[in-house]
Length: 261
Image (cartoon, rainbow, N blue to C red):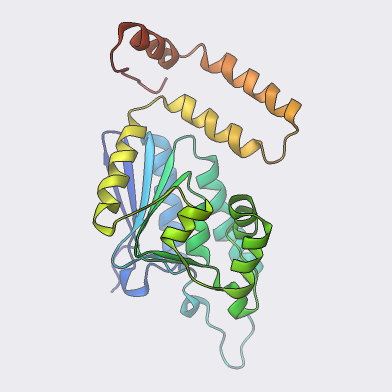
């Protein structure tokens, strides 16, 4: 019997979600989707930062096609229903989570797995890792937000190149192109990701949440609308305990002690 498809840990406000189907390169099936959505909801209620990684030699190989295999003479699967029930809420949950999300990509990140990683706020990848958009090999389009994230992160030409060829993109090139935050040596991936997540968990949580919302909103705002949003968030954050602590720590020349409120 397969192990639980998700492992969840919490240490000092930093949550760790590990995709745990290593024998299938952590590819998505219905059980993993359900467990993952529950784990993200749990992190929203008790964590101040979230780290996501994969067990074994890969991050996530995308959809487990055997989970929705088409019988030789059977009806085709309802892919729209799959997107609506699983992938759409998964991406929105990460993007709307009011705390920073770090993805540590170890090994393959393909299809929905690649785009799930890109839905995180900060992506670190091992030097041996790579990203792929193999939807074109199945006559499909990049889903799980791929058609949204790719052009915004790497530009129109590179987004179409990745989507229409399905070529592998190394972690090093992904960092050079701006698809991810950093490429690190394999041995350094989890230590670096854990350190970053711990630092974020000790930071000004409300400020991070507003920063995340502001940058995400900038894609569809005019400049004037974005300036109004900045005004509103600054007014809101200026009344927080963390802002007062940050100013006091600066004046006292000491490290701040944020409480996330």
